[in-house]
Image (cartoon, rainbow, N blue to C red; front, side):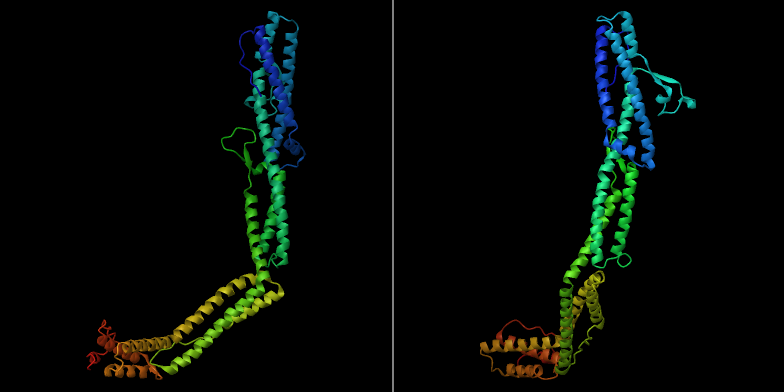
Amino acid sequence: MGVTGPAGPVMDRDEVDRALARLGAEHEAIETSLLALQDHAGRRLLEGAELTGVTRERWASTEASITLLWTYFDAYTDALRSARDIRARRRWSSREDLVELTELLSGESVTVAGSAATANAPAPHGGPGRLSERYSLATLVDRMNELYATSLDMVVAADAVWSALPARIDLLAAELQRTRRLAHSVGVRPGEHPAGDDLERITRTLTKLREQVISDPLAFWQPAEGSSAPGGGRPDTTVYDREARALEDVRREIDAVLTVRQDAEKRIVALRDVLSRADRTLAEARTARGEVLAKIAATEVPVVSGPPTALQEQLATAAEYRRQGQWHRLSPLLESLEQKAEDELLRARESLTAVTAPLAVRAELRGRLDAYKAKVARHGLAEDTLLVERYEKARRMLWSAPCDLRAAEQAVLRYQRAAAELLGGPRVPDQGVPEDDRRGPGA
């Protein structure tokens, strides 16, 4: 919408013609803008909606502004028509015509009824409104520009919210209903599972949000900072985004429960297998402990505990949940059981390792003794008296029951040291060999 220039001295004919052309173009632009505002979808929706809150207050003010806009435009149209009529009297306007035209085009020549002119503003100094207001065409255009911008801003903002949020809320509500049906099929219900409670809360929030958006769209509008353009800003989707994220979290939880329903039997069978392996390993450890106590002397062998009955009871509960289709209860129980079963199998293996450690030490000593005997034989020293004596002594200790591991280890070390000295190799560390046994091959 255009802006006229300031008033000046009496115009000549050319100046009048140029002013009329400019004002005519402005009139056409203003009319086009007003008709577009009148036909705006947002304005029509506002007229027919049951508004509340800030939108109701602003729409009441905007309706008054739009009415005043048309009042101003009608006054502007009448003034322009009068100026055109005066100019059309003569091809060459007289001075009296030019004075009249100058006053009409540049002076405060447009009268607007006081009730209309002050409908959107308080009376000056708090007193009663005046019967009429006089404006220049330039001032009138400025007033129309201002009223048009504020009116359009309100209409565009409301329309933007209505165009964006209700449709998105409806789509999310449809997804919510699908999720509710799926949740119900796997036993996720309000009061029985947190996800069921979340679905109820999301439903209530979306219903309330849609009602608020329809009745008070401006409550969900964020104006753009520093923007003076009508409709500068965006819909506030904070509540919608929060509920969309909450629904996505619930959907992931439902998917996890569905996965449990599909894989429950396989996972329960796998759990039975893991616990069975743990039981067999513990049984093997108990058997090995008896063997160690019988074959190894002077050794502390750790006690082997029995199988955990609590895990078997929980596994039976999981199987019962599966039979009853209580997938929402089965899901966390299976996750907990799988971790506990793996821990139990690890504990059983560690028990077996701890119990059989003395047998492993004895086997290592036997292997070391035989390896040195083979090495000595390769160098032609197999018949050496000292080596034969020490070998036989170590062998008797390692192959007797119960075996004194500490004494057998010292015997093997004595044999190694004697062999190393005869072979000329590096000296074997004493590693606790008694002082009276460190005198060499002639001892």
